Image (tube, rainbow, N blue to C red; front, side, top):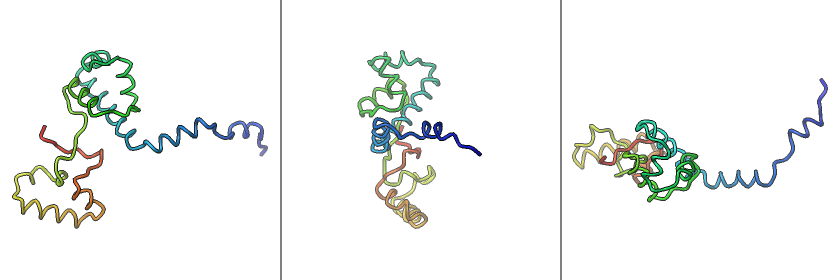
Length: 150
């Protein structure tokens, strides 16, 4: 089997400095980029659900349609102020926060006494050692759905 070394060299040429720089930037900013992409998907979902255009969203938010386009690309580092504007314009919550250290409990556990809650939390910590610090500190992953009194 003959190899076309000229073609291979052309395809396998080293990446330019700009590509390397972009890759490093994405690695450094991965956490907020993932959240920004999830928020963008939520915006798309609610735009479709509410039968709203990007231009209408921009008007309700008091920003340009170009900025809404940037938001929908999922690469904007959003401020809390911007997130609130989006939520108000859409009429829906696009992010959910952990409201208490036991936010991962089932809804039938909500009406328990303090002692019962402590026991359930203790049992959950025993079951999952890797989840212990998260449950204790009230930290949840971005993929969990946690009700916050809405």
